Structures are given as structure tokens and as C-alpha cells.
Image (cartoon, helix red, strand yellow):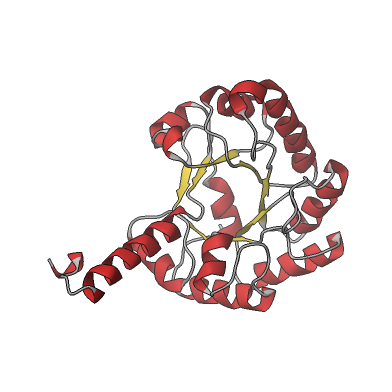
Length: 253
């Protein structure tokens, strides 16, 4: 089984793949040694680790060079966050994703908003972009941002319907998974998992509960996004303040 099919097979409703997102080869090695089944980057952490910002400000050549270094330190399938696909047109998206596949990516994440823009890309247009990415053969995790900045408790039914409409279009376009971030409402998650033609990926937050809670709702994949990077940087900052202030670092104990 090649890495793409190996990665695809890890997406099982009710037995979710857990991705503790990384940002470089060193963090990939640590997470792999901790027992991960697959490795996934998060665009925010990758950008910040290079002194840049999320939103496709990292040049594609640098994104792919980082990917190649990650692939070189692990035999696990690697998925890369390609934000909006690094292309203004479907053909450009296909070219960028094809380069990621050639660099060793088994899968990609692809957003349905343009960098720096709040509105979602119109559905028909986004389906073309997803189809272009999927034409390369990689596992495309199609992100669906309908819950971003919205109140699931008040608008849940309508937002679920909108998410499922996009799920069907992305499935028809050849996507392998549906990523619905910024959602922790159990009823909405269960409804999407029940009717989605694609395995569902949820971005973990404390309100989501543990893996077992999300598994019971039918989730197939749990991502941690920028949170591992943020936690590592917070620890680094605390330790630096302690040492520079004349104290003893935690790791000395």
C-alpha cells in the first residue's frame, strides 16, 4: 500500500485518526516517536516558525522544502496544510498540489476561503479548485469554514445544512475528507458525521472532550491545528523568562 492509500485508510468513522500537528522536521520526529500513525503540518505553526504569518505568506518553495525535510525523517504518511491551495486558478492549484505530491505529501488540507478574506469561495468555484487538487491523486481534506465566527447553538441546523451541501460537492469533486473547524457542538458534529459522504475531521478544542467523545459522534479524524506550536512556544517563553531572570528552568529538574 502506498502512502496515499495508507493515509486514506486511517480515516475511519468512530475510530478517529489523531493528528498532533507539527511545523518542522524536528517536531515531526518527536511526534512520530510518540506513536503517531501519520504526520500533519499546520500552516500557522509552519509560518510562525519561519518568522512569517499564516495566509500563504510562506513562499511555496519554502513550504515544499520544509515538507521534504519532514518526509526525510519519518516513514509515516505526511499531510501538508496548503491553505487555499497556492493558486489563483484551478490549474495553478493542481500544479502546486502536484509539486507537494512529488515532494512526498500523502495528503493536503485546502481551505474554502482565500488568504486574508472572510467570505467563503462560492461553492461551484471551490468545487473546481478541490477537483484540481484531487486530480493529483493526493488525499484532499477539504476544509469547510461555515462555522467560523458563527453560533452553533443558535444557527446549528442551517449551518449543518450548509456544511453538508459543501460536503456533497467536495465529494463529487474527488475530495477524501471534510474538515469542519471551529465546531464543538456535539449535536452538530453528529449530524454532519451521519450524513456526510466524506469522513469528517474536527479541530480539537477543550469543549470537544476527549477522543472517545468525538469517536462516539462518528468523527474520523481529530486535528490539533496550531495548538501544539502555541503550547511549545509558551513553554519556551516561560523557561526563557525564568532563566533570564536568574531562576532555574523546569528541565533542570
